[in-house]
Image (cartoon, rainbow, N blue to C red; front, top):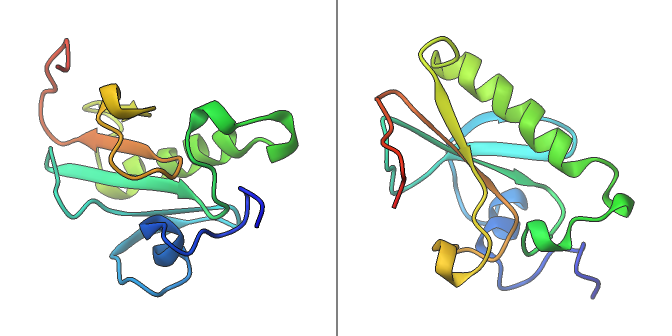
Length: 120
């Protein structure tokens, strides 16, 4: 199995496959956005690629602009959630020190309140 193929033990791959329920926010041909089950802000949506990539460390030219797809879908999410004007944060965690808890590339879309800086 190649790393771009669905992984049997990946929770996000199972969400994309419909094996684990999620509450959708937006979708494109290459990406899916759904509400985080443990939200850290009034708006907390995860945007994931439909292919399996462990993290931003694996993104390469061969992936055909997948990060562009994630950001474009995040832009749709902030429109749907009504936080474009007030502001929002896009976060990509990589590795254990960054608190990456699911080994599948994803972007957190956070908003709906004033977000502190530095984050942690």
